[in-house]
Length: 331
Length: 284
Image (tube, rainbow over the protein chains, first blue to last red):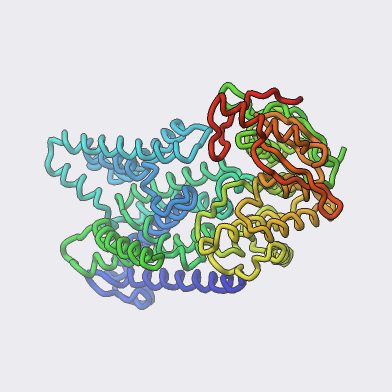
């Protein structure tokens, strides 16, 4: 019965939402010192309150938002391209944001103003969308979109390598490499304020594609005969990814695998429905990233282990296992 | 004027016309069969009428030009089923059919009672209600086809356009499908369907449109269209006209001797008859 799936869906959403809430709470509590967030606000020490408000809260908020937008964007792109291997980095937005950030580090802008880096990364992401739109144009063929994304990723990657190559200062090169590994450490509420609006707007645009993605299960032609405007759907997906993932990359660096794995993992739980996968993937992405960020703090507390490294180290073997188990079930 | 009126529909592709100025007027309700050899332009004509590719000319349905209608409005007026039978995710069959109700649902609204009823009726009409909760990719080809036909039925339009819906179905389900189409027509709607099975087309359709090389070469009742002479010229086959239960039907007997002789001088006849350029005069 569709009713049977309908009952499970709210339960799934509620379950994931409480998981995210729990991890968010833990994210406030766990670190160099254990702080109980509830008692800290009602009457803890001033130091505890300071750590919570200035260090842990921005980090938890960014983990929530960045994870959510990565999961959501991955689910949208997989639905749009009808390919389970699509992920937020596909359109070249993350690579372009990284290039912007790298240029800011290399040019010494970082020293001039603390927020030059995320701003410069954001400009990189937005420029990449303009370029993408110019390349794809109004024709908006899906294949052209993928190829343009691949080209943009390679170009931004090559330019990033060029900057590293020509970097006269080994410390700047080091900083670039570390930034590119992706992390949520030492971010402030200004980072949250900077990325937040873009991520929220991007998420809204992405969520608007749900209906179209459902219809696209039957192919582009039938989707159009069901009243879906393909140009609009594609524009929402591209713009939403650029704003959201661009802003996320700008404040956290490139964090891989979340957008690829999370939709993949949750798809069977929503009966493979691409529209329903969207809110679920946003919650799943948030949970995944918050959990990974907790691991980073717990495994090697003193060593500043990078979040992007951990998501890839957990993600890649897990993805392999998933592929193999799916294959075994199919056989 | 009510019904479907197509006026000089033309679809260019490269430097040739895939559909070359096709005009016909069909007062509703009718079961219209579109027949013709491979590459005749049947699928392209159907897509043009459904507003899915740029075409010149007009396709007027109940006084409104389908090619100029807003997508949302057209989605309630007509349903289209392409020949390709792909569902990209392993959705449950009921969900596949439920997709037909998207034009009736608000942006974030779930299915209404009317949507559930339409889906249940469509599943029953194609007798696929028994595996409504199975994943689409676990079904056989014929079963998948029936689920996709049910999807088209559930859209509940006034005009159904289906490209080769009967191919891959066993005889019982082919006949059941044509019976479903007849019921739809009896209910006051129209069906435009392309068919390769000439017996099925002749036995069940009110009217046949015969296409060849992008042009409409004959338009009328099956008896008028499927003359032995014309079948030999367009398809290169010999047909035997029959009367079954008082109605007309044809059965293909073999290749038309003159046609096969003539074409084989130009090029050998391919197994599928694909791209078989005939150098015979076309009838206008």
